[in-house]
Length: 196
Image: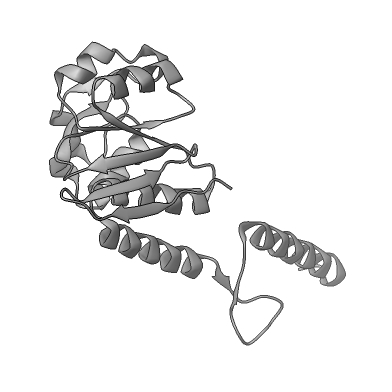
C-alpha cells in the first residue's frame, strides 16, 4: 500500500507539504487557483471536491463531468506536450505517475509548476488519492467528507444476509463471490434432490 502524508507548515504564506503516491514530498506555497488534471479519475475527484473552477486544462480522456469538455484538452502520458501544458499557466498538474515519464515531472517543476503523482489500484488507494488532491488544493474537509461518504456507500453495498443469519454481515468482494458460489451450489443440490 502506498502512503501519503499531509503536513501543514505555518509561515508568512501558509504552505502545505504533501507526499504523493510515489513518496515525493511537494511543498505547495499559497493558494492553488490553476490546475490541470491529466487523468480522468483525478479530474473527477477534483470536481467532486468542488474544485472544477480551478481547472484550466484537462487530459484528453477527461470527460466527466461533461462541463470539463469545454476546457483545453491535452495529450497525456508520454505524448504530453510540455509547452502546451505551460502555455495554460498552471500552478499544479495532477498526473498518474505510472503514465508520465520522470522527465516530464522534472521539466514542469523546473518551470515552477507543482506536480503531484497519483496512482490507485484499489479502493484504499483511491481514498488516499482523494485526500492527497484535497490537501493540494486546500479542500481537506471536503476530501474527508467524500471519503466518508464513499466508505459508507461502499459498506452498504457489501451488506448481505448470509446462511440464513438474522443479522446482515458486511462482506468483502471475495466473500460475496464465495457466498454466491455456495448459494448456487445449494440451489443445484436442492434441484437435483427435489427435482425442482
